[in-house]
Image (cartoon, rainbow, N blue to C red; front, side, top):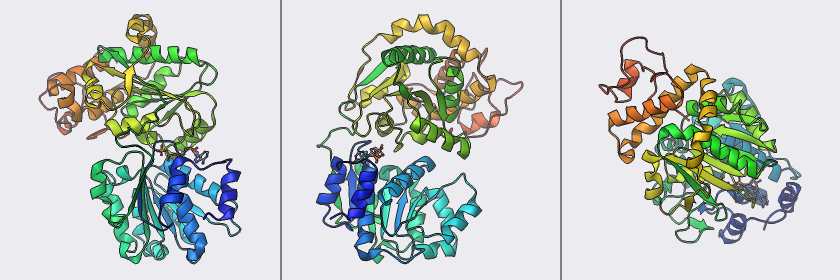
Length: 484
Ligand SMILES: Nc1ncnc2c1ncn2[C@@H]1O[C@H](COP(=O)(O)OP(=O)(O)OP(=O)(O)O)[C@@H](O)[C@H]1O
């Protein structure tokens, strides 16, 4: 069924067999043009699984005229768009009539990128919703979609949630209607039931539903041991992370490649600054939305190719990103939800490799384990809490060595992330600020940062004692919640 030149492309990528999801799509999809909703575990090759049928359809004689977009892939982040485009280039590398793959995402010069798109032959376009919407405001861009054959939503549950959903809807309104016959494909490792009620703009009601998972199985890779390190208070968390990294590094000093996820961009920035002077054998990386696109691109490439290293990251790389050979994923603090937990854990044990995952939670966050009993998380085999006193002095010194302004920003990021979880954490606004202030103390700030009155109002923390002292206010950016 697959064109020989496509198979040659796969061989050229050193793929010698189809992964289960690829096998399933190629054998169980009634035709290469059928709408489908596909679920398979993280890191099992979903990208190739949606590219192959979509490209094969074009090779079956359905390739639109030069200059037209035939396959549109929509995904949540710039890094992921680049990664998907690279896979598409790999698969199509051996085609006798080459196929161009373009990307469209924010953070790069709009005018030159748009010109390149308009002048080029973007048979495949991989885009993030914001920039694509922006492009679609131009008639010349809309004209390039008149012959569209396939629309793929990668990380479909994310693309259809409250955050991205409206943008995706606008895109669907700007391209030819579904009734013109284009194929819709929705892929993700996590497909909550509610997604099925919102896929109708992309999939016809008789779409094919494929899954490589049994019944209620969780989408985490079965062979990844998952552990929780429980510590009593938020003040213990930095020490616990340090102790954990030392223990884990000692077990695998040569191939140690680890991602540590934090809760907010500025919190992640602080962790990076803190550990820059620790664990000298390891190169350190940081990746979050407070960096410019050049820095993000450079770091992504560097961490993809490094043999060892420690990356502090926010959820900008929580989904979809493929950093080969990551052996350990650490989550410092609870993630926003169970699905996000699953995607973060999925950054390890990809393409059949091994991996481990550890989450560090203090008391107010431990509800996360209780309400997500289906997640296969066990207590960490070593008593990290017992080691905390040993790490106190060094941790305090590392934090003291960071820029105080970065710690202030981390404080605000902490409030922004945690505020929606007050009920679950069993605290009222005053209790939340109390925890934030303990976090400030853990960061070695002599006293909690004073937030501008406007920030406090925006966060709904007005009148809460503990952070609205008069006097100099630090000029912090006004944000409802810290972006990742
Ligand atoms: N048939 C194959 N043989 C070997 N490696 C493969 C094969 N298919 C894909 N891969 C590689 O496996 C890795 C994971 O693939 P991919 O990123 O598509 O996973 P995914 O299922 O989309 O994961 P996520 O749910 O995290 O987005 C990539 O490095 C990819 O190149």
